[in-house]
Length: 37
Image 1 (cartoon, helix red, strand yellow):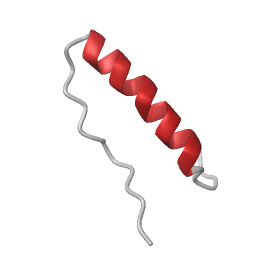
Image 2 (cartoon, rainbow, N blue to C red; image 1 turned 90 degrees about the vertical axis):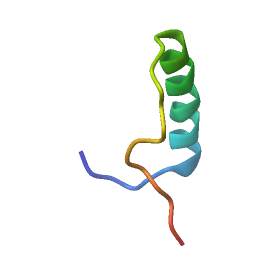
Image 3 (tube, rainbow, N blue to C red; image 1 turned 45 degrees about the vertical axis):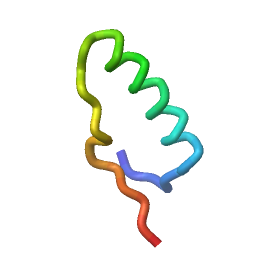
């Protein structure tokens, strides 16, 4: 879906993904979302 990006919400989701990735031995490198000025 498309919508406005909410940086705070995305950063919170990244923290959750990092925990899940670490638990399952996945190397998470920030797939696909980059903030630019």
